Amino acid sequence: MSNLRLTRRTFLAGTGAAVLVRGGLLAPAAAAAAVKVGAPAPAFTATATTGKGVSLADYRSQIVVLEWTNHDCPYVRKHYETGNMQALQKEATGQGVTWLTIISSSPGTQGYVSPRQADELTTTRQASPTTVLLDPTGVVGQMYGATNTPHMYVIDKAGTLVYAGAIDDKPTSRRSDVQGAQNYVRAALQAVAANQPVKTPITRAYGCTVKYP
Image (cartoon, rainbow, N blue to C red; front, side, top):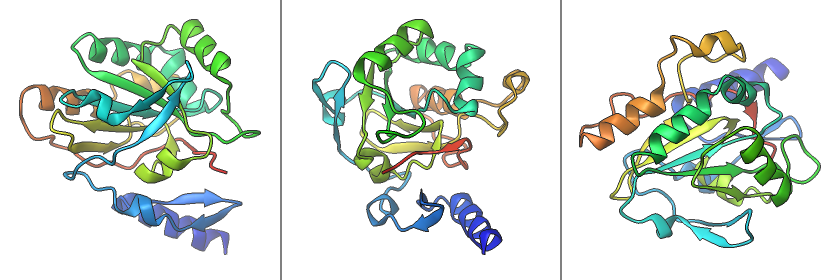
């Protein structure tokens, strides 16, 4: 049975379908199934570490990156411990891109943090997101079909989702693999800035599963 579940999950992830893992079983995500690259990005409101509600609509007419994260995940650590994620954040925000880091780990699970802990992580890792959003109920994550950490999305100025998937083409937790990797997010941002179509708009995200309730 475990092999069947893994095979089905792999198939769905490869086709871009939303897959959520709950209790080791595959659970349907009807809302996430509606998310589609090339269509308007779903509207949402989440709470920032300041306690303020932040909406995607607040960044209308701006390019937006959504980064699902879990600081204890070795795949996320790969990109933060090498400075790869921070460099991409600084590069993007320096060009006027809004970068929203989203934490969907539920209380008591790997990656869950309080607002204070989230801010401490931003400081100690020298990260540069526009803001960090907390999604402990998983509503936003499931809306977007975020399955892994990191799971990345790019939204253009028109509010269209133009990229969804992995940060790069090296699906390992080895820090040495950051060098020479093809960074899909950077390529998507460059294409959007040049008013060009994103050559690889959908890839399979890799990393730890998002720890939904």
